[in-house]
Each structure stands twice: as C-alpha cells, then as structure tokens.
Amino acid sequence: MRDIQMVLERWGVWAAGGSANIGYPRTAAGLSRLLPASRAGKPSCCDDDGMFINEAMIRLRKHDEYLCSLLEWHYIDNMTLRVMATKLGISHNHVSVRLQAAESFIQGSLCTLEIKLEMDRECRKENILPPRLKRVV
Image (cartoon, rainbow, N blue to C red; front, side, top):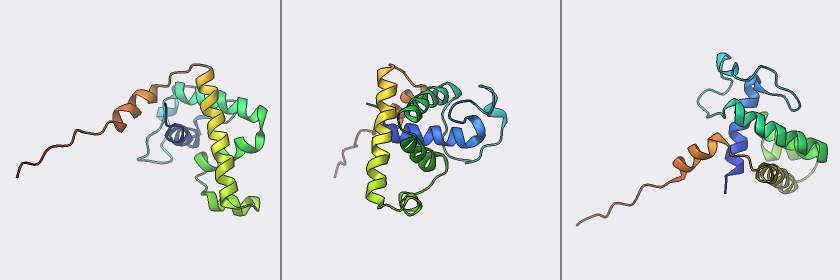
C-alpha cells in the first residue's frame, strides 16, 4: 500500500516548481530539471509520476472541484488545515475529513488504473527500518 500523503507531498513540490497545472503542463516534460527549485531540499517526484498524478487530479476535478481545490491548497500552496478552515468558514476537522476523502479518491484512481509510480520504490527503501542491534552488557 502506498503512502498517498507522501506521494501528494512530492507531487506538490513538483507542481509548485512550475511543472504542472491541473489540466495541462506549464513546461514540457523533462525540462523541469532546468528550472530552479521553489522548495529546495524537499524531495520531488519525476515528470512521469507527476503526469500520472495530474491525470488523477483531472479525474477528481471532473468529479468534485471542491475536493481538488483542497488538495491544491494543501499540497501545492502549503496551506495548513487551520488556514483552509478559516478561509472556508468551517472547522479544521471538517477540512481534514474532506482532505482525506480527496486523498482517497487519488489513491483509488491510481490503483484502479494500476499505475506504478517510480517514487513507490524509493519510498519502500525509506520506510524500511534498520534491524535493532542487540546490546551486549
């Protein structure tokens, strides 16, 4: 099972760097590495993964524009739940529930299309914990 929040965080860095706009890319695929990074130090996804996630975002926009906007605000614009709640005039708990619904939609879209992301391999390596060393006293 993939960590959809981590996937969307990396996609958000990629999209914020000018690599994408929901519906069409701002720059040609492969040229995003030539542009300066907007969030230096944060891992990004590759262009192929970004395009796959964009496709899922387009599907979400067709289904529910509101949920798509929440994902864009949170992952591209780095808005916190409280800021989004204030902007929308609802509690941050409601924003959290709606954001989870949007994340689940993206996860479901990627699974339904049987898309294998390049970052899935990297994430598995990051999540493997080193074996605990026994302390001999």
